[in-house]
Image (spheres, rainbow over the protein chains, first blue to last red):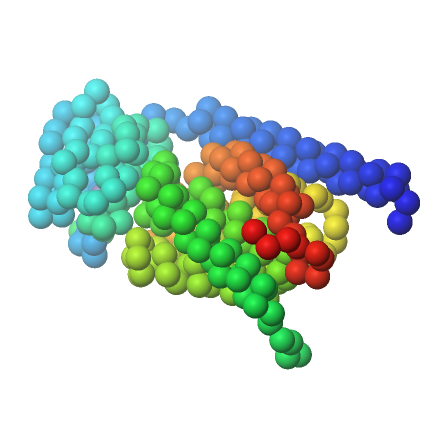
Length: 127
Length: 173
Ligand SMILES: [Zn+2]
């Protein structure tokens, strides 16, 4: 193959690389903004621990609730929920930070804790 | 389709596995914002990318399989084994197809592989934990996967060019 043809083919490939990278970044950013901007403030969190029936906790009242037999603590303050004092090794649940938008969630796999913000408290599943 | 493996090829294969393990270890220390243990930024994809271009699909699959199994044993968990396996498999198959199509350079191949790696991990985690909420991390993962894939693709492209082939007159070092 002549050297020129090879160089041309290589630069065409690099151009396509750049287009792929740019479009992935744009799609990611657009989807991220879309999710962020359309999310509404939730009023309740649904808490699931293992196979136990889920409980619903209001975001309006500050509270501290011990979960998973003391495995961690759910803290409600200023209309937001976060997890504190978790026993899990990598503390990924604590690093999830505070959640308050409908659909946001905190998951702690080691303790089987799943906390999710709901728009309204009407959908109290389980019992 | 039996082929004879040369000592040099075997050495390169073993070295690639060793490097893959090292990268796996490093990334096991890097926390990811996704609340699922085992979801990684995909550094170890560098080894898969290199193996794919320099050793072929079968050896690349071998490198990934050994890497995923060993790192689950050494610094993972049975749960993270499943995400890692899904991520590595989907990523490698996609990268092999794209390489064959010779549409992208190794950089584009690596980017596609990196993003596919993250998406597959999230899909498996969402299935296992029965939580569609995990999919809301996909946009951010698309961005981080693209950035990591770009860096890995540039590094991988250099390696692919610099590391001598088996057949040529490689000097002993
Ligand atoms: Zn935790």
